[in-house]
Length: 168
Image 1: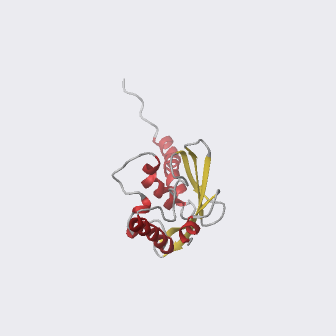
Image 2: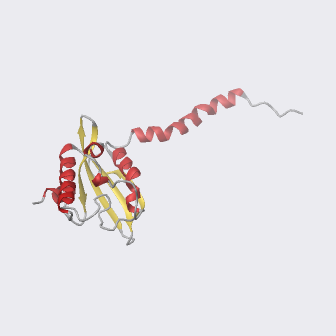
Image 3: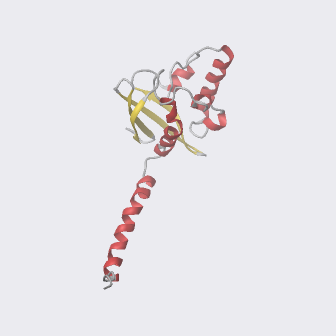
């Protein structure tokens, strides 16, 4: 005996519901606050910095200007490159004595979350540091002709990234 065939009218009633649920993640992404997707992509690309001791990859702040411009606005890109050139030239730490994405000289992270920040044009990153403490960074984002870019990173325990890089 053959199994009963599905009732086409019943199936057609549920199809829009199923399609709506499948489309929900895409809709939610499109409603993400400006710049949050950029910060998410940054951490997806450079999360290895907090996990691997040695890597053949180039750390974010050693990347060429073209790569940095995918994430940072032009003033911050210039400051990052100036610091990199200072370190290359002097073979010493210049203005940054920590990994800026991790606010630590010994990065480690788990339970990382990227979400809309406390104000428009901001993204908040939270994670557990190797110590087990929660770390929170606030990314200030600016619209540019190439899309949203990071203008600064604020740290709860000290000066912002721009302040550190611009210091004499």
